[in-house]
Image 1 (cartoon, rainbow, N blue to C red):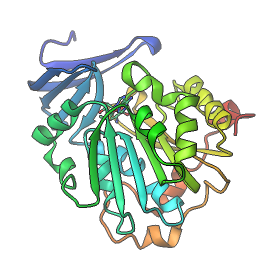
Image 2 (tube, rainbow, N blue to C red):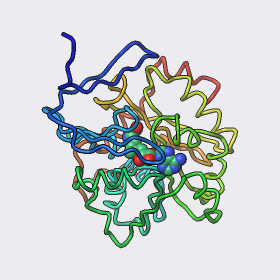
Image 3 (tube, rainbow, N blue to C red):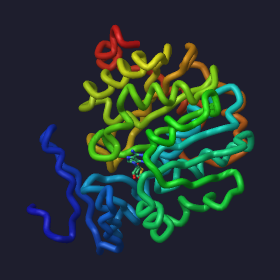
Image 4 (cartoon, helix red, strand yellow):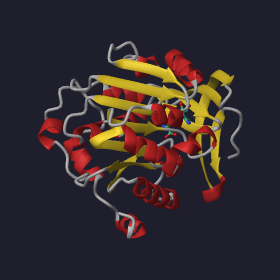
Length: 286
Ligand code: SAM
């Protein structure tokens, strides 16, 4: 059935697949100096943000991504207080980070204020912690901010970026990882959205190699479903200066003093399990 104008479709030419959502209307569209930001009202997934034609966030299932990009790394770090989010302009990851009472400061650096403005208009629930006194929202290029950050001034870096194209490309480079390594304290951790484990293995392999080249000694990938992203299966990759990324503060995670809809200690443990094909593909890189 050919799809008409009532459907948004993202075509993944490289893998011969496509993803579609039935839309009621487009409710936001603005070309920024960096990218085209659009928001649709859909029939089954609530509001839906698209950047440069790529699916970003939907009301219905964003909680999985935002929770998996924040809680695993924060419960892996011994006592996270100083956090930086690179990207994350929809503010959903910021909200999850600030659920942790031990976090004293969280700085979000997104290159494009249009994304945050679109989120404030159409995803207000994601922006509910923007006025938290611990939150700082900045709009600049993440690599420049990280290169200017004082050495050892951060406990956790979360890279909630677009795909490695356009403005997001630089966030997948050894230069950026080196800047993160310098800005992180000795027990500091970085986590980054690392695309689909099924069809982006080459990118993930390159990320492992770049993390190592930058000086990170331990790398670990977590897996989770994400319905609106290519293949519906996504990942987040952690790196640290010392090992033990497959261990976390399980008792604290079980007693977490805040609600979640996807994340819990069992989900965390399960997300650490490495599929055979992935383990083989990363052989020699881990
Ligand atoms: N969940 C989405 C994904 O996996 O595709 C990412 C969501 S978040 C909206 C991505 C953000 O990265 C965007 O707001 C974009 O402006 C930001 N971004 C891209 N390149 C950047 C850069 N070099 N520095 C800071 N933010 C950047």
